[in-house]
Length: 359
Image 1: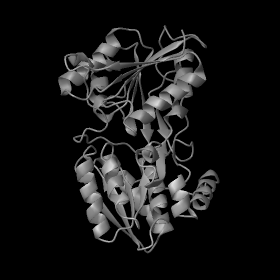
Image 2: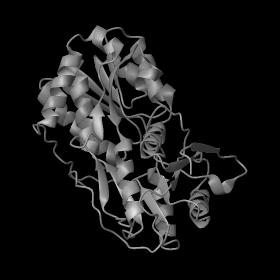
Image 3: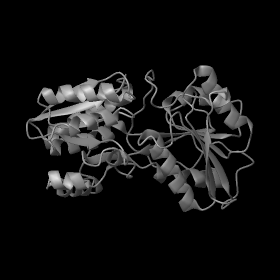
């Protein structure tokens, strides 16, 4: 089977292809842990692909594959992993978050009941309940979910970001940009994983800009650029001069506010943030989903599937910071040197991020 990517657009009339994903504002699930080594044991089946055989993977996402953030990071990461594998076909079903629970469940069921995919990757927190519902009904189907599934089914793997470390990376960047000692953190609905990131953010600021104070605002949504712009504008009026955001579609509004204030330093949350606003975004936090793909492919081909979680962490490069952008290098002349030193400290094991309290 040739290596290719197929993008399937969801139509309003196709209820079976509709689901909600990570950006949904009513999610309450979370998970945090220290990075763990990849496990190589799990539920046994009798029909695992032989080593080197072609694999077929479907990625379900609630938003557009080119959203410049959460969805696109996984789309591009999965495709990069497939390209490197050389024998993996990726199908992307996008724009699915337009229905309720019934449509969400129908989308996961449709992907599972056809039997055409070796792996279903459900990239979005709101997909987790649907995966949990159908995992037992399709025991030979392998799933990957972005949070643990109730009951820990043997056929469902899990991949998790260490959100405290994402926040710590962001806090390090934001600390490089302040001269007033006022730093801003803009979140979305205030979900548990955002609170974990906030804890890591504040910890980093306490180390890299110990005299600074952090202003935190949760806008209530990831997806409203106007609301995000108003929030950033108010922060700037209050004296904040360095801002990081955990927005999705809303991030463009943050950058618009920063663009209108020359003294403000603004940092992004994905490898695409600079593209969204190249003259404003000075550097970004990133998640590297491509590191997961070889693990999943090996487990599928060697019949060693596991429900033990895989982590995106500082230690394995799953969460990191970009180089300074052209704008960042011009505006903050010491930024790249600080990033290089920070990366060296991570590589030497000199940075330890405190897990946020749970519950």
